Length: 215
Image (cartoon, rainbow, N blue to C red):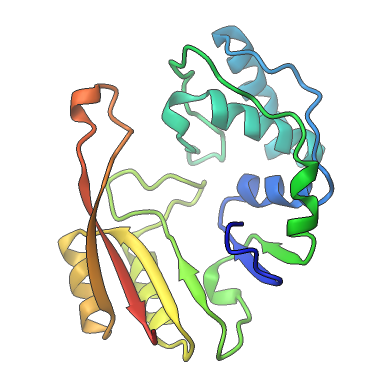
């Protein structure tokens, strides 16, 4: 949102994420109970999974998704193979919930949101593409289908074929570095903190890579 783009296409394989932003476009306001309470969290998680898997109210699904993401463990977003959200309750002492997202409605009014495989997107030759796929780490269950190494390769090759400017971010694993180097990308490395470990001492910085082409 910081770029204040007049037009943008945002795509994600995670339906819940895309649905959340689509509901913001319609002036999302929350009317569910927002409690930093373990019992309430699991009740909301159960309801979210029931509605999400059975195609229930998209507005209610968006509300519950926001609550779960804010209240769940370390801000994780994780689904099992059946499509159920399975992040455990978090350990926050205090959470500042937001209940009214209508102020973002104007900003997102001209943006398009889609939920499909990247290969199905229609882009113009001069479009700027920023890709932020699930990182090349053991945990890749960001959506029901996950994101395999074969998907990483497909994405890299798809990005390399684009005639316009491209920026990609990923964890700088050896095979990611090799893949994008072979495809002619320029690589820049940086340290990024990790907040997944349950122990603060285990949250060490890791190497990330910014890969660019046509810039």
